[in-house]
Length: 292
Image: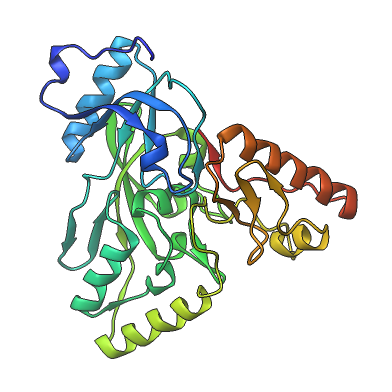
């Protein structure tokens, strides 16, 4: 176990010791982090980051742990979890906290007649994670509906415009800066509940073919004008297994942990996939997932 120990000035924060990635990540594997801290508002986020930086304590920001591969063994960083940043404020526009899940967000939208984010249905993410990597499906991405994002930049609370977020395909400025996202004001429109429900059902139907079980979602980004899953399938890799990790037989861009896979086995499978696709098509796949 790492020797990281937080002193008494952190006592007012919500803290979890011995954070087990196997139990908390959607891929269901990984080691143990010594401490996870759960700030509950923007000011706590600012204070926490100032403390950690002043004390020289390494940290990692995490959300729902749905598109990540943790490492094995003891983790040498404090985790900052955004899961308690779960406010949703609706006045003239809607502000959604980073810890709000896509499901909770869409329930709020349906109840309040707000349309525009239905494409997020079924994505097992928090809004913060979606904002970080510009999550989306079927050609729609959250960056399209962002008005502004509030984040702790350095040690100061700032509001970034949509342009300043530099959204592109599975990209944002936050992936370069590592800033702690607090939440976002989103561009939504008024619509009847029946219309919103119909949109949700349509997007749900599009996702019905995706594999069930422990996974990280899509492992690779789609190359320009191509589909990663089709390239992987074309290379004959559906069903390929390394230990407890398997390329899904339903969707080749998913790796399923169905038999107690280790991070090392999953990494090996990822390397095999990348090498095979390059050998077959001369295309280098790029991971969408993050390695922790």
